Length: 182
Length: 150
Image 1: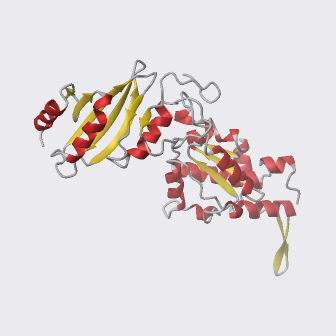
Image 2: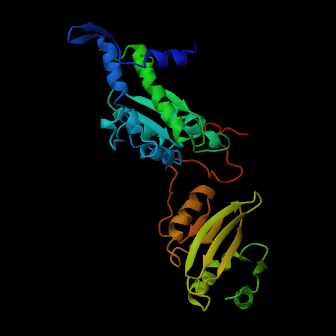
Protein backbone atom coordinates (compact mmCIF):
# COMPACT_ATOMS: atom_id res chain seq x y z
CA UNK A 1 0.00 0.00 0.00
CA UNK A 2 1.23 3.47 -0.78
CA UNK A 3 2.40 5.53 2.18
CA UNK A 4 -0.19 8.22 1.51
CA UNK A 5 -3.05 5.72 1.51
CA UNK A 6 -1.68 4.16 4.65
CA UNK A 7 -1.58 7.52 6.39
CA UNK A 8 -5.10 8.32 5.26
CA UNK A 9 -6.35 5.00 6.57
CA UNK A 10 -4.62 5.38 9.91
CA UNK A 11 -6.23 8.77 10.40
CA UNK A 12 -9.68 7.95 9.17
CA UNK A 13 -11.18 7.59 12.66
CA UNK A 14 -10.92 9.35 15.97
CA UNK A 15 -7.58 8.34 17.50
CA UNK A 16 -7.79 5.61 20.15
CA UNK A 17 -9.68 2.47 20.97
CA UNK A 18 -13.17 2.19 22.32
CA UNK A 19 -13.65 -0.24 25.20
CA UNK A 20 -17.26 -1.20 25.45
CA UNK A 21 -18.70 -1.11 28.96
CA UNK A 22 -22.25 -1.66 30.09
CA UNK A 23 -24.23 1.45 29.29
CA UNK A 24 -21.56 3.12 27.13
CA UNK A 25 -17.85 2.93 26.46
CA UNK A 26 -14.44 4.31 27.32
CA UNK A 27 -12.02 5.75 24.78
CA UNK A 28 -8.40 4.93 25.40
CA UNK A 29 -6.03 7.14 23.49
CA UNK A 30 -2.73 8.92 23.79
CA UNK A 31 -2.69 12.59 24.68
CA UNK A 32 -0.41 13.35 21.76
CA UNK A 33 -2.81 11.82 19.28
CA UNK A 34 -5.69 13.76 20.78
CA UNK A 35 -3.79 17.04 20.57
CA UNK A 36 -2.81 16.38 16.96
CA UNK A 37 -6.38 15.44 16.13
CA UNK A 38 -7.68 18.66 17.68
CA UNK A 39 -5.05 20.83 16.04
CA UNK A 40 -5.50 19.36 12.62
CA UNK A 41 -9.21 20.07 12.71
CA UNK A 42 -8.86 23.68 13.69
CA UNK A 43 -6.38 25.18 11.28
CA UNK A 44 -7.31 28.78 10.77
CA UNK A 45 -5.48 30.28 7.81
CA UNK A 46 -3.99 33.74 7.63
CA UNK A 47 -5.51 36.15 5.13
CA UNK A 48 -2.44 36.37 2.96
CA UNK A 49 -2.44 36.46 -0.82
CA UNK A 50 0.04 38.16 -3.11
CA UNK A 51 -1.43 37.50 -6.55
CA UNK A 52 -3.87 35.46 -8.65
CA UNK A 53 -3.64 32.31 -6.47
CA UNK A 54 -5.33 34.48 -3.85
CA UNK A 55 -8.46 34.56 -5.99
CA UNK A 56 -8.54 30.76 -6.00
CA UNK A 57 -7.96 30.77 -2.25
CA UNK A 58 -10.93 33.10 -1.78
CA UNK A 59 -12.95 30.78 -3.94
CA UNK A 60 -12.06 27.87 -1.65
CA UNK A 61 -13.27 29.93 1.29
CA UNK A 62 -16.55 30.70 -0.43
CA UNK A 63 -19.68 28.60 -0.19
CA UNK A 64 -19.05 26.55 -3.33
CA UNK A 65 -15.90 24.84 -2.00
CA UNK A 66 -16.02 25.97 1.63
CA UNK A 67 -12.90 24.93 3.50
CA UNK A 68 -14.75 25.49 6.76
CA UNK A 69 -16.12 21.99 6.25
CA UNK A 70 -12.67 20.60 6.98
CA UNK A 71 -11.80 22.78 9.94
CA UNK A 72 -10.23 25.75 8.18
CA UNK A 73 -13.15 27.73 9.45
CA UNK A 74 -12.31 31.41 8.99
CA UNK A 75 -9.35 33.27 7.60
CA UNK A 76 -7.83 35.49 10.26
CA UNK A 77 -6.56 38.92 9.44
CA UNK A 78 -3.87 38.80 12.11
CA UNK A 79 -0.99 36.31 12.31
CA UNK A 80 -1.51 36.05 16.08
CA UNK A 81 -4.71 34.09 15.53
CA UNK A 82 -3.61 32.07 12.51
CA UNK A 83 -2.20 28.54 12.45
CA UNK A 84 -1.49 28.09 8.78
CA UNK A 85 -0.21 30.51 6.19
CA UNK A 86 -1.16 29.76 2.60
CA UNK A 87 1.40 31.49 0.42
CA UNK A 88 -0.95 32.25 -2.46
CA UNK A 89 1.11 34.04 -5.06
CA UNK A 90 4.43 35.49 -6.11
CA UNK A 91 6.86 36.54 -3.41
CA UNK A 92 9.04 39.42 -4.55
CA UNK A 93 12.29 40.42 -2.89
CA UNK A 94 10.59 43.35 -1.23
CA UNK A 95 7.81 41.12 0.13
CA UNK A 96 10.30 38.62 1.57
CA UNK A 97 10.94 40.42 4.88
CA UNK A 98 7.19 40.98 5.30
CA UNK A 99 6.47 37.28 4.82
CA UNK A 100 9.20 36.35 7.30
CA UNK A 101 7.82 38.80 9.83
CA UNK A 102 4.28 37.48 9.47
CA UNK A 103 5.54 33.94 9.90
CA UNK A 104 7.50 34.93 13.01
CA UNK A 105 4.43 36.62 14.47
CA UNK A 106 2.33 33.47 14.19
CA UNK A 107 2.05 31.45 17.37
CA UNK A 108 3.36 27.85 17.44
CA UNK A 109 2.37 25.41 16.12
CA UNK A 110 2.34 26.94 12.67
CA UNK A 111 2.21 25.44 9.22
CA UNK A 112 2.96 26.68 5.73
CA UNK A 113 1.38 25.77 2.42
CA UNK A 114 3.07 26.95 -0.79
CA UNK A 115 0.28 27.40 -3.28
CA UNK A 116 1.06 27.56 -6.98
CA UNK A 117 4.13 27.72 -9.19
CA UNK A 118 5.33 31.11 -7.93
CA UNK A 119 5.38 30.07 -4.29
CA UNK A 120 7.12 26.80 -5.15
CA UNK A 121 9.89 28.04 -7.42
CA UNK A 122 9.11 31.46 -8.81
CA UNK A 123 7.17 29.74 -11.58
CA UNK A 124 6.82 31.88 -14.70
CA UNK A 125 9.18 34.40 -13.11
CA UNK A 126 12.04 31.95 -12.65
CA UNK A 127 14.18 33.28 -15.50
CA UNK A 128 15.36 36.79 -16.28
CA UNK A 129 13.78 38.61 -13.40
CA UNK A 130 15.43 40.80 -10.82
CA UNK A 131 12.60 40.98 -8.32
CA UNK A 132 11.08 37.55 -7.64
CA UNK A 133 12.09 35.11 -4.89
CA UNK A 134 12.63 31.71 -6.52
CA UNK A 135 10.47 29.77 -4.09
CA UNK A 136 8.99 30.84 -0.78
CA UNK A 137 10.97 28.07 0.94
CA UNK A 138 14.01 30.31 0.64
CA UNK A 139 12.36 32.40 3.34
CA UNK A 140 10.22 30.13 5.52
CA UNK A 141 9.89 26.33 5.78
CA UNK A 142 7.05 24.86 3.75
CA UNK A 143 4.95 21.84 4.80
CA UNK A 144 2.85 21.25 1.70
CA UNK A 145 3.42 22.27 -1.93
CA UNK A 146 0.58 22.55 -4.46
CA UNK A 147 1.58 22.78 -8.12
CA UNK A 148 -0.57 24.71 -10.57
CA UNK A 149 -0.80 28.16 -12.06
CA UNK A 150 -3.05 28.76 -10.27
CA UNK A 151 -4.07 25.41 -8.72
CA UNK A 152 -7.72 24.46 -8.89
CA UNK A 153 -9.71 24.98 -5.70
CA UNK A 154 -9.92 21.20 -5.35
CA UNK A 155 -6.13 21.09 -5.35
CA UNK A 156 -5.99 23.54 -2.47
CA UNK A 157 -8.56 21.49 -0.56
CA UNK A 158 -6.43 18.42 -1.21
CA UNK A 159 -3.37 20.23 0.10
CA UNK A 160 -5.22 21.37 3.21
CA UNK A 161 -6.39 17.82 3.89
CA UNK A 162 -2.86 16.54 3.25
CA UNK A 163 -1.62 18.97 5.88
CA UNK A 164 -4.19 17.61 8.33
CA UNK A 165 -3.02 14.06 7.67
CA UNK A 166 0.55 15.17 8.13
CA UNK A 167 -0.24 16.70 11.50
CA UNK A 168 -2.26 13.70 12.64
CA UNK A 169 0.61 11.40 11.70
CA UNK A 170 3.13 13.55 13.53
CA UNK A 171 5.11 14.14 10.35
CA UNK A 172 5.40 17.93 10.30
CA UNK A 173 8.84 19.48 10.64
CA UNK A 174 8.22 20.68 14.17
CA UNK A 175 6.82 17.36 15.36
CA UNK A 176 9.77 15.45 13.93
CA UNK A 177 12.28 17.78 15.52
CA UNK A 178 10.48 17.41 18.83
CA UNK A 179 10.08 21.16 19.23
CA UNK A 180 6.54 20.65 20.38
CA UNK A 181 6.76 18.22 23.24
CA UNK A 182 3.37 18.02 24.92
CA UNK B 1 -11.25 64.73 -34.61
CA UNK B 2 -9.84 62.72 -37.47
CA UNK B 3 -6.20 61.74 -37.80
CA UNK B 4 -5.87 64.13 -40.77
CA UNK B 5 -6.90 67.10 -38.67
CA UNK B 6 -4.49 66.10 -35.93
CA UNK B 7 -1.68 65.68 -38.46
CA UNK B 8 -2.45 69.15 -39.77
CA UNK B 9 -2.03 70.52 -36.27
CA UNK B 10 1.38 68.88 -35.99
CA UNK B 11 2.67 69.93 -39.41
CA UNK B 12 2.03 73.57 -38.50
CA UNK B 13 3.17 73.38 -34.89
CA UNK B 14 5.95 70.86 -35.22
CA UNK B 15 7.34 70.61 -38.77
CA UNK B 16 10.05 68.15 -37.72
CA UNK B 17 7.52 65.60 -36.47
CA UNK B 18 7.10 62.32 -38.35
CA UNK B 19 3.95 60.21 -38.43
CA UNK B 20 3.28 56.52 -38.26
CA UNK B 21 -0.23 55.19 -38.81
CA UNK B 22 0.49 51.47 -38.81
CA UNK B 23 -0.71 50.98 -35.24
CA UNK B 24 -4.11 51.36 -33.66
CA UNK B 25 -3.49 55.06 -33.02
CA UNK B 26 -1.70 57.82 -34.81
CA UNK B 27 1.91 57.83 -33.63
CA UNK B 28 3.96 61.00 -33.76
CA UNK B 29 7.73 61.00 -33.34
CA UNK B 30 9.05 64.30 -32.04
CA UNK B 31 12.31 65.82 -30.84
CA UNK B 32 12.63 65.60 -27.04
CA UNK B 33 13.75 69.23 -26.84
CA UNK B 34 10.39 70.37 -28.29
CA UNK B 35 8.30 68.23 -25.99
CA UNK B 36 7.40 70.63 -23.17
CA UNK B 37 5.97 73.51 -25.24
CA UNK B 38 4.25 71.03 -27.50
CA UNK B 39 2.64 69.28 -24.54
CA UNK B 40 1.34 72.64 -23.29
CA UNK B 41 -0.22 73.29 -26.68
CA UNK B 42 -1.77 69.81 -26.89
CA UNK B 43 -3.46 70.39 -23.59
CA UNK B 44 -4.68 73.92 -24.19
CA UNK B 45 -5.27 74.10 -27.94
CA UNK B 46 -8.35 72.95 -29.85
CA UNK B 47 -7.13 69.37 -29.70
CA UNK B 48 -7.96 69.47 -25.98
CA UNK B 49 -5.78 66.52 -24.99
CA UNK B 50 -6.60 66.31 -21.30
CA UNK B 51 -5.87 62.71 -20.47
CA UNK B 52 -2.50 60.93 -20.29
CA UNK B 53 -3.32 57.26 -19.88
CA UNK B 54 0.05 55.64 -20.35
CA UNK B 55 3.61 56.81 -19.96
CA UNK B 56 6.42 54.38 -20.49
CA UNK B 57 9.83 53.85 -22.03
CA UNK B 58 11.44 51.33 -24.37
CA UNK B 59 15.08 50.32 -24.43
CA UNK B 60 16.18 49.68 -28.02
CA UNK B 61 19.80 49.07 -26.93
CA UNK B 62 20.91 51.89 -29.26
CA UNK B 63 18.61 54.50 -27.74
CA UNK B 64 15.66 54.89 -25.38
CA UNK B 65 12.19 55.86 -26.58
CA UNK B 66 9.73 57.66 -24.37
CA UNK B 67 6.11 56.78 -25.17
CA UNK B 68 3.14 58.90 -24.15
CA UNK B 69 -0.40 57.72 -24.82
CA UNK B 70 -2.70 60.70 -24.78
CA UNK B 71 -6.35 61.19 -25.42
CA UNK B 72 -9.09 63.76 -25.24
CA UNK B 73 -12.12 63.07 -23.11
CA UNK B 74 -14.20 65.60 -25.07
CA UNK B 75 -13.18 64.78 -28.67
CA UNK B 76 -12.48 61.09 -28.03
CA UNK B 77 -9.31 60.97 -30.08
CA UNK B 78 -6.14 59.22 -29.01
CA UNK B 79 -2.58 59.88 -30.09
CA UNK B 80 0.78 58.40 -29.23
CA UNK B 81 3.81 60.64 -28.84
CA UNK B 82 7.28 59.16 -29.05
CA UNK B 83 10.62 60.78 -28.44
CA UNK B 84 14.03 59.17 -28.84
CA UNK B 85 16.52 59.83 -26.06
CA UNK B 86 20.25 59.45 -25.87
CA UNK B 87 20.96 56.24 -23.97
CA UNK B 88 24.03 57.60 -22.20
CA UNK B 89 22.30 60.76 -20.93
CA UNK B 90 18.55 60.29 -21.18
CA UNK B 91 16.87 63.57 -20.35
CA UNK B 92 13.42 64.98 -21.09
CA UNK B 93 11.24 67.65 -19.58
CA UNK B 94 8.59 66.53 -17.13
CA UNK B 95 4.92 66.81 -18.02
CA UNK B 96 3.72 66.24 -14.46
CA UNK B 97 2.55 69.87 -14.26
CA UNK B 98 0.41 69.37 -17.39
CA UNK B 99 -0.98 65.90 -16.68
CA UNK B 100 -0.71 65.21 -12.96
CA UNK B 101 -0.65 61.43 -13.38
CA UNK B 102 2.77 61.75 -15.01
CA UNK B 103 4.29 62.48 -11.63
CA UNK B 104 4.19 58.82 -10.55
CA UNK B 105 4.70 57.40 -14.03
CA UNK B 106 7.83 59.44 -14.51
CA UNK B 107 9.15 58.29 -11.16
CA UNK B 108 8.62 54.72 -12.29
CA UNK B 109 10.41 55.27 -15.61
CA UNK B 110 13.16 57.06 -13.72
CA UNK B 111 13.84 54.09 -11.46
CA UNK B 112 13.46 51.37 -14.08
CA UNK B 113 15.15 53.05 -17.08
CA UNK B 114 17.16 55.87 -15.54
CA UNK B 115 15.53 58.66 -17.52
CA UNK B 116 16.03 62.07 -15.92
CA UNK B 117 12.86 64.16 -15.96
CA UNK B 118 13.91 67.77 -15.80
CA UNK B 119 12.02 70.02 -13.37
CA UNK B 120 10.11 67.09 -11.90
CA UNK B 121 8.86 68.16 -8.44
CA UNK B 122 9.80 64.94 -6.63
CA UNK B 123 11.99 62.61 -8.68
CA UNK B 124 12.51 59.73 -6.23
CA UNK B 125 12.29 55.98 -6.69
CA UNK B 126 8.72 54.70 -6.67
CA UNK B 127 8.81 50.97 -5.97
CA UNK B 128 12.41 49.74 -5.80
CA UNK B 129 14.34 49.84 -2.56
CA UNK B 130 16.44 52.92 -1.93
CA UNK B 131 19.72 51.02 -2.19
CA UNK B 132 18.87 49.34 -5.50
CA UNK B 133 21.66 49.63 -8.05
CA UNK B 134 21.12 49.86 -11.79
CA UNK B 135 18.07 50.22 -14.00
CA UNK B 136 16.40 46.80 -14.13
CA UNK B 137 14.33 47.25 -17.29
CA UNK B 138 17.33 48.18 -19.43
CA UNK B 139 18.32 45.36 -21.71
CA UNK B 140 21.89 45.25 -20.42
CA UNK B 141 20.87 45.05 -16.75
CA UNK B 142 22.82 42.35 -14.91
CA UNK B 143 22.08 40.94 -11.48
CA UNK B 144 24.05 37.73 -10.93
CA UNK B 145 22.57 37.21 -7.45
CA UNK B 146 18.86 37.42 -8.18
CA UNK B 147 18.64 36.74 -11.89
CA UNK B 148 18.78 33.34 -13.52
CA UNK B 149 19.53 33.84 -17.21
CA UNK B 150 17.78 31.68 -19.76
